[in-house]
Length: 90
Image (cartoon, rainbow, N blue to C red):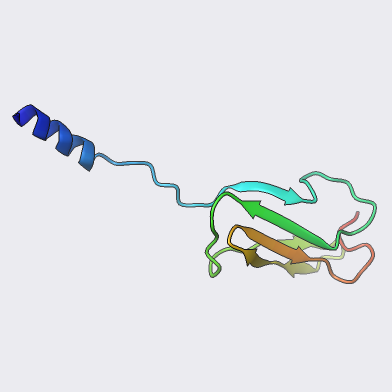
């Protein structure tokens, strides 16, 4: 009986794996895509809900401007394209 109690305590007190971050699942457009014109929006999807205060994403235009995204769903960040025809193309 004592062995069962010790084993149960050891199993309950051992460290377990904790996932601290949402993992990247997909994006639109796909990573590495070569586009002939700027997309209207870049969307990033993650494996679990995002913390709206801590989650960020941005893209940089060819002329060096930073465009920040916003959390638009529990597991998604969207970045709207600036109104320039060559916003993300090189």
